[in-house]
Length: 296
Ligand code: AMP
Ligand code: MN
Ligand code: MN
Ligand code: MN
Image (cartoon, rainbow, N blue to C red):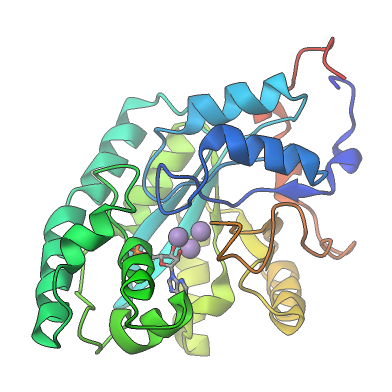
């Protein structure tokens, strides 16, 4: 595999989640699933946490699957939450680890406040209910609440829970202060990685706000934007193909897979990036962990 060229890596999947954040599979199971689905370069990108990186990397390399370290950092920007994917950093970098720990820090109190809001509309026991789904006690997420609300029969599926209870203005939504954009970028870049704006179509920014995000991101040293991702339609991918070209950004590609039961897009099952784009992994060539030459 060592002499595999970057062109052979087109089925890169550089965005997904394990039980270390709000996914339902262990890192080893994700590695096996990525391999089985024909992924050629993989990154596990748990929310605000690199605790699964060594396991994911070891499992991937044992399967002959090239690996990039990854993380998805929650950032507050212009009154919204923006996700920045970091790739190819040193996952033991102390400033990165400390910054992510601080970013996770408020999640437990936030979860208690979310449960209090849900109790006010008659949904009891949501904190304890969500905890049953949590794999990492420092990472209670809205997704875990959503799983509990479906299990308890309050909603038919997870997207209904978000719509009715967990988005801005709804009873279980709690404002939260996440990382600053500049801090998240510094943690990733100083640990040797590259930063990517995750699923840009998801933010419903005005064109002015989006321009501000992209230019500030570039000002902080950002080089990539996710163009093909599980929550983008084909039209979204076409739109952000043009954005990437306009701003001279490299493109990333990832399923944002969370769970076999819940995710619409499985690992490695996305459309290809347009040939007009330069993939972000071109910048990360020296950061890729290659399997031992003996592995098929
Ligand atoms: P949190 O970091 O706790 O705010 O949770 C954010 C996570 O919730 C995201 O990473 C997604 O996995 C999930 N999520 C957000 N919005 C939706 C939605 N509309 N439908 C399903 N899952 C969602
Ligand atoms: Mn998630
Ligand atoms: Mn995200
Ligand atoms: Mn994600």
